Image (cartoon, rainbow, N blue to C red; front, side):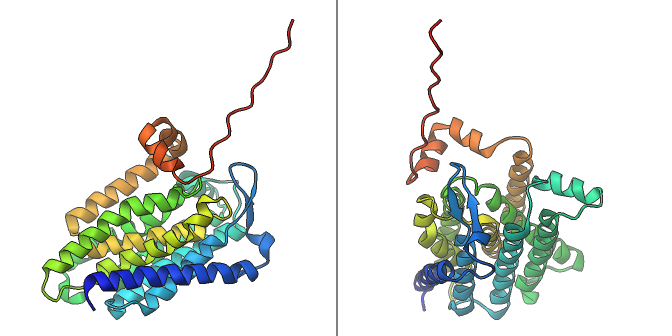
Amino acid sequence: MGVVAAAVAGAAAGAVAARAAYAVFRRRPPIGDEKTWTRTNHRGEPITLLEGPALVAGAGAAVALAPGVSPRLRAAALLAGLGGGGLGAYDDVLGTTASKGFKGHLSALARGEVTSGAVKIIGIGATGLAAAVLARDPAARPSGAALAAFDTLVDGAVIAGSANLANLFDLRPGRAIKVALLAGTPLLAASLASSSRESGGSTAGAVLTAIPLGAAVALLPEDLGERAMLGDAGANALGALLGLAATVRLGRAGRLVLLGTVAALTAASEKVSFTKVIAANPVLDRIDMLGRRPVPPPPVVVSPTP
């Protein structure tokens, strides 16, 4: 099977499996009942988080069956996606909002308080590193154990950091998926171009990028329609899978640049509101609002006539 055909098959499998999983979970949630997964969105309206488990299940099924992926990369992708998604679901269902962000959760941990967010941060860091270990081809390792260990740590940080960053954008309808598409589409194009130039080149990078994007696009109408949202489960899995795909495609310099970008954006999120930054930029705001319900104008307060 050619590279393009394998990528299309992966995207289609992710899309079909995600829609099927969403339909099943709407009838019978994976844990608890419908109320367990219902939250209030930015408009004060009820919304379901079942989109997240649907993306996790759909992408996981597609990864398990996708062509052109070696057993070690398949195992790494399943670990990254299911691990990030499972830990995100734990935070979705059992988490509290008493502490927020890296700083809030780590500060609570320093006080001896183990929050669900801290469990998720540590767990995603561990699964990201484990996925990086699984994904690295022993035959392609650089000379020297120190350099090999460095590359693995960078890859693990990219996977875990991407999982967390995707979740930071999941604050408005469709935003996290749009960010994933803006980041993942060039990665997919580069993977297709690179593989087409290599005789017998691996299709893994293209397929591993296409699967989560296909699953996300299939669920985008629910997200934009404000009927569902990714939540921690879906956003963490989406980010982790794209992070893994990036480590497969990019060289060391590219991975270091990506890690620096992820770290900078994560640090910035502790100080500034992504929503305010996006709203203040006409181009970003137009992209953010594409396909969404209009934001209602603020109520007009009429002062009484003296």
